[in-house]
Amino acid sequence: MSENMLTLRNLKVVFPNAKGMIRAVEGIDLDIKTGECVALVGESGCGKSVTSLAIMRLLNSPPAVMRVDSINLGGLEIKNLSEHKMQEIRGKEISIIFQDAMTALNPVMTIGKQIDEIYIRHSNMSKKQARINTIKSLDLVGVPEAKSRANNFPHQLSGGMRQRVLIALAFACMPKLIIADEPTTALDVTIQAQVLEVLKNMQKIHEVSALLITHDLSVVANMADTVYVMYAGKIVEKASVKDIFESPYHPYTEALSLSVPKLSDTKHSFVQIPDSVPHPMFKPTGCYFHPRCNYATEKCKERMPLLKKLENGREYRCFYPRNFEDKKGDHS
Ligand SMILES: Nc1ncnc2c1ncn2[C@@H]1O[C@H](COP(=O)(O)OP(=O)(O)OP(=O)(O)O)[C@@H](O)[C@H]1O
Image (cartoon, rainbow, N blue to C red; front, side, top):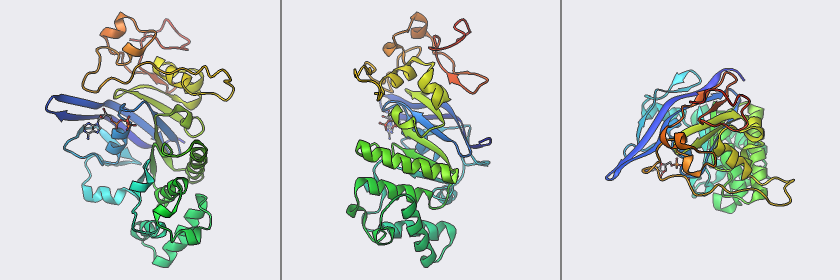
C-alpha cells in the first residue's frame, strides 16, 4: 500500500437556491492508497454522499455547483473528462455499490443478464464466456446455486442476496476503486455483518481500493484501514481505524465512538450525541461542532480551527484535541 489510487483535492460543492447557498462540501482532500479501504464517516447531512457522487462525476449540475482542484484516479486526472469518457470509466475503473439494491438493479432483467452485460461491455467477452464469469462471481459473493439463481429477477431474491449481487456487479470488471455508499444500512444486523464480510473479502482478495461511506462507526471497525470523519461539510479528523477508536482527537470523533455499543458493555452506557448536525444554510460561527461540544470555549465560537496535518498522517481540526500527547502544542 504505497501509491495513491485516488487523490481528491479541495472539493467544494454548493447548491444555490432562492434563499441562499447550501454549502454541502467545503474544500475536502481525500487520499486512498492502492488496496486500502478508507471510510468516510459522519452523521446524516454531513456531505458524504455528495462527496462520493462528485468523485464519480455523477452530481447533477444544476442544481449542484462543483469546484475541485484535482480528482486523480490512478494517475488519470478525471475532473474535466467528458461524460462520454466518464461512462467508460464508471463500471470499469470505478464502481459504486448503493444502499438500495432494489433501485440499483434493473427489475425487468435477470441478475445474470445484468452481470453478463458488464463483462460483455467492458471486457469484450462472448455471451457464453460472460455467463461463465457471472456464475463464478455470484459464487464468490456467496449466492447459493449460482447457476440457477442467475436466472432470477431481483424481486425473487432476499435483501441480503440482492446486496451480494450488487457487490458481484461492482467487482465484475476489477475496478481500481469501489465506492460503497451505506452498503448495508437497509439490511438486518445479522445480514449486515455477512454482507460486510463478503465485501471485505472481495476487496482484500482483489486488492481493490475502496471508499466506504457510512454514518455508523461500528461498520468501519472490521472493514476500514483509514477513517476520515466529516462534519457539516468539512473533514474534522483523519486517522487509522485503530487510532480512531483508541485515541480519537476530535470531540466529535470521540462522541461517535462512544455512541457505538460494545459487546463488553453490559450497562448499556453508550452515549448519544446531543442535538443534530446544523442545517447547511445556517452553520454556526467558529467551529461548526461547538454548539454540541462539551469542551468548547469562546475561541471555538469565534474561529474555525485549521485542519492540522501531522507527520504520521493523522489530521484533526480542533483547538482542544482529546487524547493528545502534547497538550501544549499549537492547535490554532
Ligand atoms: N440535490 C440537492 N439539492 C439541494 N441540497 C442537496 C442536494 N443533495 C444534497 N443536498 C444537501 O447537501 C448536504 C449533504 O448531503 P449528503 O447527502 O451528502 O449527506 P450525507 O452525509 O451523505 O447524509 P445521508 O447519509 O443522509 O445521505 C445536505 O444538507 C443535503 O441537504
